[in-house]
Image 1: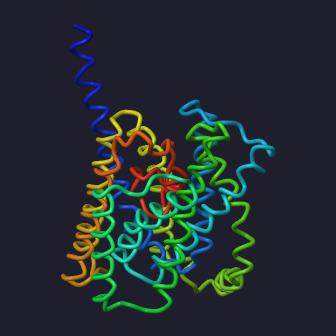
Image 2: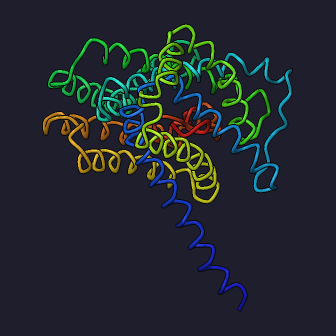
Length: 339
């Protein structure tokens, strides 16, 4: 009798985790675009997100709701290069969302398999892509080229940040797969180290970019969007969803199979595109959206082509910040802060 009662409860709990992850993941890129639109301080925004995720993990650990590895400086020194690469990925990601729409972000995010495949072959001595994988990469490239060629919102600034983001996120994915597995951290320990070290680096970037002067000027005048109620709500929502996706991403990965989690990650991209089109006009043209869907389809084919390959590099369970997608790629930023 107890077994019969427990079955439906378990299914309900698993479904809740999957739905929670799907909603957080598909909404996060849109929420972050909303936040950076009303709160034009990308460095401060990411610092607040790092603080929320690091403090959230520490607080939940104190309450006994999760377990994370204790922070120590010896491990922090070893982890610092990975945290720096992660910081650059989130920094370029935020600035990309600042200057371009969500669709542009998804197109460039979907192009990561192109560079990852090249990097894995060139630097990690992995086999060359199979015919099916190569076909999927060609489809991704074709969709991306078509999108860029018809993007009416094309600006040199936006696409400079897009290229910088593509390079840094690819470096992160390849480098962290190579490095983090040797540190022996659990997932929540990874989240804590990544966000805490990134928070420590944030003031330096505020000074280098000169953003600190804008922040102080806004505080001094009391008139800037630093104190705008809409901006406050947007930042709060962004920080909360960053922490929520850390929880739901990790819990859902444990509750369902890797294949089911991959399918959920793909569906999330389509949901993000649909939500972005419905809620406002900050999206691509109809042909641009078609190219975007073409690129995502190439990503689906890519996932199918690499699933179950015996000589594929071992995957690690980690998480992302300003995007909310592609845990199927084991993106380090996804397990780190939800953006």
